Length: 171
Image (cartoon, rainbow, N blue to C red; front, top):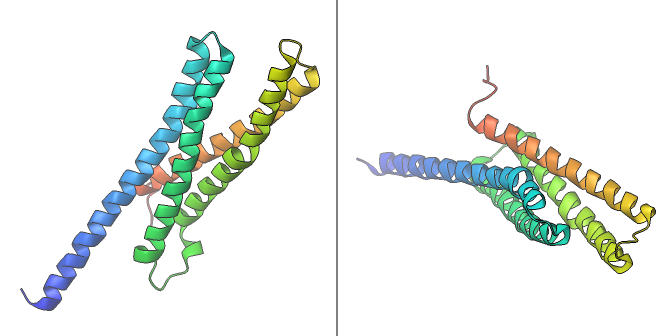
């Protein structure tokens, strides 16, 4: 095998390995998102009598998911720029747009809305059982908006996973 052929084989192996790593990152990230948000968190609230404890445990898991989302999104974007986008405009790649959308949902949901919810939880704890309706309503609204961003993140993740599987088929 000559040097040019060996170089080509090496690049093909590296590209295949990076595609596999990318797929592993995407499925792990989305699986974590779906498992925590739609299986574990609801189960905590169903199984535990202490809603504050359930909320604290769910919050810790969402914190882990939030930081993991940032890390995986940045790693996927770096991999795309460093390896797969030579000579192309990165913003035109649909997968890049989806990852950026997921990252934006995380940044808004976890790093903007979550601190608001935490502040409202602390305010509710000060009031004890006599929490004013206005505070409860604010918490419900912020929680609903946060849940909407989480759902958007989840649906974008589903779209990203389906694209990796070749759906919809490209003409």
